[in-house]
Amino acid sequence: MKEYSEPRMHTAEHLLNQTMVRMFGCGRAFSSHIEKKRSKCDYKFDRDLTAAEAAELEKRVNEAAAADLPVRESFVSREEAAEKLDLGRLPEGAGDRLRVILIGDYDACPCIGPHVNSTGEIGRVKIVSTGFGNGILRVRFKLDKEV
Image (tube, rainbow, N blue to C red; front, side):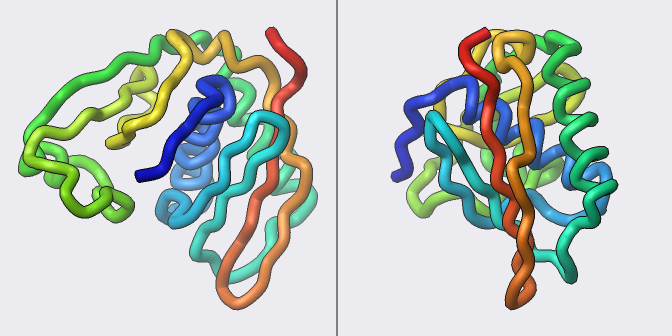
């Protein structure tokens, strides 16, 4: 099972994923690599983002971060989660009771990683670059220094 060690970056990934869903109607990232200095998320997509789209994506992620939304966890049955959430990245053997991370009314996602207590702790998110190939959009991002 994947381990996450950077709560700020990992919570930013949740905001990025939900913002991609809201802006483009795509699914959440099917693959991600979360590191303290720089991270990336891969989405099934049909093209690269324009510069204006990448700028708008960054703006909306930062609006969600600046809103200082509470981040909390809830435990729900797999059945209940399946009715409302994408369980596509759930690892085998996850069990019948799932931990769901709730970020205000902005995002809800099953997750095992550590998170900040509120999005205000994230700081600013910077979209470093995007790239497209073989039906995959890769979004690379980083955080400003400590808040």
